[in-house]
Image (cartoon, rainbow, N blue to C red; front, side, top):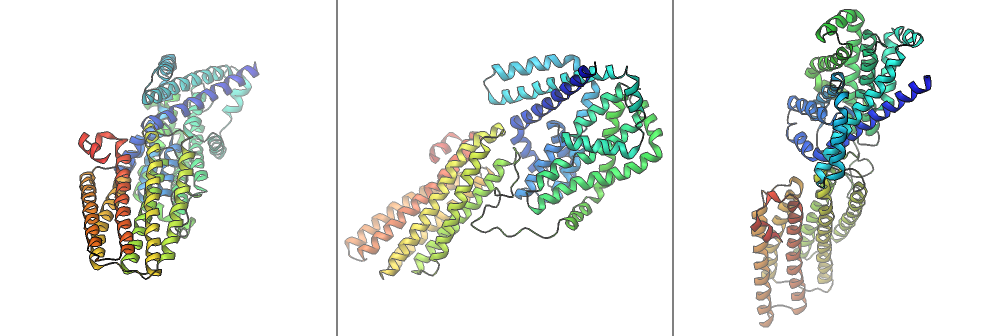
Amino acid sequence: MIMTIVLGLIGGLGLFLYGMKLMSDGLEKAAGAKLRNILEFFTKNKFSGMLVGIFFTAIIQSSSASTVMVVSFVNAGLMNLYQAAGIIFGANIGTTVTSQLVAFDLSEIAPLFLMGGVIMVMFMKNPTIKKAGEVVLGFGILFTGLTTMSSSMSVLRDSPAIVNILGNLTNPLLGVLVGFIITAILQSSSVTVSIVLLMAAQGLLPLEICFFIILGCNMGSCVSALLASLGGKKNAKRAALIHFLFNVIGSAILFVLLLLLKDVLADQLLQFSGGNVGRAVANAHTSFKIFQVVILFPFSNLLVKLTYLFVKGEDDKVTKHELKYIGDKSLYAPSSAIPQATLEIERMGRMAVQNLEQSMTAFLNESTADLEEIYDLEDGINYISGGIIDYLVKINQYPLPVADKNTLGGLFHVVSDIERIGDHAKDIADLTNSLVTKNRKITIEAKESLIEIYQKTDELLLKSIYTLKHRTDDYVNDIIELENEIDVLEKRLQKEHVKRLARQECNPNSGLVYSDILTKLERVADHGVNMVYITLTDNTNLLDEDQIAELQ
């Protein structure tokens, strides 16, 4: 008898946890990229950030997942701490949606969700529909698990010993401790509150002690973000601390108020919930979170500053031979993996542009003074390229949002294009060294021609990198026009050069170097165009057919 009850509880909990994970992961894979864009766009101020945090967490059904994502965004520099504070506040309200759904008791229609989810996952070909099917299936499994747990708990109600033990659980501190420990282990306050809700609905727990268990759940939910931030940068640790301090301070205030008013609050909540104890627990969870936000939101800036007292100083400056956004101190969250990789690729691109500028400056000045610095930066570009490729291979094995999966393949090619730009910069440095060593000269006219084509190439590269970072078509027509101008200019300059050689106006050996650099700059521009084509054609609604044809 006891073993049957225990197995029923364990099995139901397992189904509940798996259903919630399947639903959360499915939502993140199906709509994670769009939700991330909403996060980035609507977090310009804390209030809009809070609203987005509520919406986002209500959808993915996990404040832990939301907070870990925010921590990873802060770690990558995609978001500052003040923006993060607003989202974290909202996430704490959004997480109460799960307990509200549980209180509605949709277990009777759970089989419909199960069958619908299975059909979508097994028989649909569209990846997005399949991921949406995982959400529906997870929802059905979640409520099937709740039904199993509820059935086992109803049997416990018939045991006087169990009822007596749980009925005597009246120590507020013990209630907080129980809630904290269980939530820290399960890493989900939604799960713990749902279990408490079921037990209260079966008459196994007094409503008053449920209040204190919920406070413990609130603090226990911070463990996931704190653990995730341990390997991150200092701002990531501060973001996790915002979540922790919000819940600790808010729970401490509520703890004192509950000691004085728990009986009055229990009566009011029961009356508001129509006498449904389970619904009263869910409403208590939501009310507590809203209360914490109302009390602490005006002091959110102070909360951010308080984190600097616990985590002091700044991170060491990242060198050109280190990864900045995806290195050892990067944090993995499915929805932030591709943005972090894109930031690192953008950084690599700017290093390549810088090296091309230094190489061209050295060549035009006929100076070898900066060549070692150019070669050192090229080594850094190669190191970062290898690190990005390793990272892209690694994240390809994880469950990414569908839109990000489609983007991933193109990023490998973008990295290759940027590395080739770096190689061309190094080749120009080599040509400079050879020219200076052999005491050969380039004519003023040739230098002016090189400056003209280099300036257009540099402008094209900067606009290509902007396009890569922002995934916008703002500069597509400019890039197409520049590419055409560079092609025409390179051919014209090569023909003029041949004429100068025929007139014996320049040294043939120096002329070969000049011609080689013209060719390299034209090829650099081609790599810049390739970056734009790859970046935008995975989202072809940004381009019309003529633009796609021009970029190909």
